[in-house]
Image (tube, rainbow, N blue to C red; front, side, top):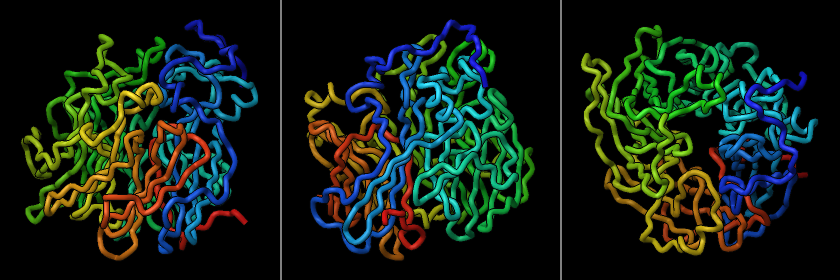
Length: 503
C-alpha cells in the first residue's frame, strides 16, 4: 500500500485538531478512548435477574478528516461492552482494527476521504469499511458491521479484533447487511447485501445461514434503483426490503461527490421475496410515494396471508446531511417519523401500496421488539421518542449537543393491542440513544429497556435501566465517568451465553 496522488487536491490534514464543526464539537467531539472501567457507579438497584452484556458501536474518528465538512457517519467503529452481573457493571471499549484503522494509526493521520467514496482516498485499501454501524453476536464471537463490506470478527470477551470474516468462504456478496435477523423459532440467521457486486451496482443478494453456520441458500436480485437498503424484515414465508430514496451514482463518486443523494422523485420501493425456494425474478417491488422508511420494527402475516410491516416513516429526508442534487435538505427540527403499518398482499398484481395505518402519530425511531417474536405477530414495540412538551430544556442544552442524528428526549413503549403509549422521560437535560430489550420471563415484553443516555448538563453518559412494567422512573441509572458520542446500533447478549473476561 502506497500513498497516491489525489486528483481532487485533497491532502492529509496536518492539524492534530478536529474541525470546529457541529459533528466534531460539544457532545459529538470524538472520544478516542480504549480501555476499561470497573464497577461503574450505580444509582438505584439493578435486579439480580439482569445478567448479560450490552454491546454497542459508535462512529468515532481516530484522526481529524482532510475533507471539508466530513459527516459524522464516517467515524471508525468503536465498540463498547457493558457487562451486568450481580448488580454491578463493568465497561470495556476498543476500536475495531480494520484495514483502514491500522493504516491510519501507522501513518498518524487520516488517509481516507469522503464517506463511502474510495475515489477521494490517499491510499488504496482492499477493504475500506469502518465497521461502525452494528455489533452483532454470532456463535461465540461478535460481528462488527458496516453494510459496505464484509464484517469484522471480534473476540466477545476481550474485544480484540480477529479479522475480516467471510463465513469460512461462504459469503457470496461483497457487502453484508448491518441488520442481520435471527428467527428464534428456526435458529436461522437471515441476511442480505446491497450494492452486492460493488459500488453503484443494483445487485442485491439475500442469503440464509443455519444454526451451524452453513449457508442454505443465496438469491440474487436486481433492485429498481441503486438506493440505500439499510434494514429489512421477515415473516414465516417472506423477506421484505425497503429502499430509502437516497441514491448512488457511480459517476458522481468518480467526480468526488457523495455516495448518497436524496431523490425527491423516487418512490419508496418495498421488495417482497419468498423466504424459501425463490429465484431473483420472484421479487416484487411494491411502490409508495416518496418517503423515508426508518428501521423496521417487525413484520408478520395475518390470517388472510397479507404481510403487515411496522416501521417509522417520514415524508422528509431524515438523513438531511445528504441533500438532493440542488443541495436542498430539510431543517432537522421539522423532521418527524410516525410509526406506521403497511399492509401488503404478496400475491397482488397491482404494486402500488395503499396509505399505511398510523400506529402512533409521534416522532419515533430505532424501534425494537422482543426479538423472540421476530417474524410473528407482536404486541409490544419500544423506541426512541421525541415529545417537546415533556420539559426538555432545549435552550440550555442546544449549545452542548453538537451535530448528529435528530435527537430523542424519551423512550416509548406502545402496546399494539390497547394502543396505550407509555413514555419514560430521563430528564430535562437528557437525550436517548437506541434502546435494547432485556427479557426476564417467557412472556412477550416482560423485562427491561436499557439505553445509553446523553446528559448535557454533566457532559457525561449514563445507562438507564427501565422496567417495561413501570415507565415512570428508572430501576437504575449507571453513571459513566466519560462521554460516549452518538452510536448507531447495539444488542444484548444473555449472561448464560457469554461472560466477559474481567478476571
